[in-house]
Length: 240
Image (cartoon, rainbow, N blue to C red; front, top):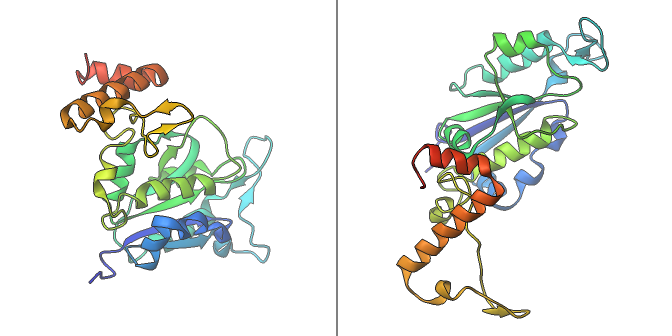
């Protein structure tokens, strides 16, 4: 029987709590949420403002466009969220953060849970990021309207790795980035479709040859599409 201490605890600090669980309430993540394999808490940052207008932002010090989330309000929200709970990684999603990798996702999935702060406007007061030791993570070299879509993506990546969420654990082994390469092409029935055949090796029944073909395809796709990953694999001696 799963106890409250076994549940992976995710907390998201946001100005738009109604965006959660969103797609995380469906499919694998949603079923796991219903089965209490993990829990999701959406914390409204505005609840921690101390004025009647629930003010959470201010103009940038030094001038400039837009608004900045206030350190005092965000800090109160963070402190209350992590109070009386197991220590969890605290993540701030921002375009200037360290790029997210599958290795980082696995690390976060092995923790008791995660606390995710979603930025908005021009950003978050730097003092709260530093004082609360938030780890800044980016999903890529692009800018979103806020951190909520990124939080949904990050949590989806994490939750599927939590034991008990995915029925076929083997499917988590042979996929993109797990071994530093992109995944090989996949095929299924019918064997012939619009004149295109499934590669004969995949229907040969020779498991060693199938493994060799898949490895070669993964290497070639990675070499062509992700030269950065290819170079890293070569530098580590994983490929010739």
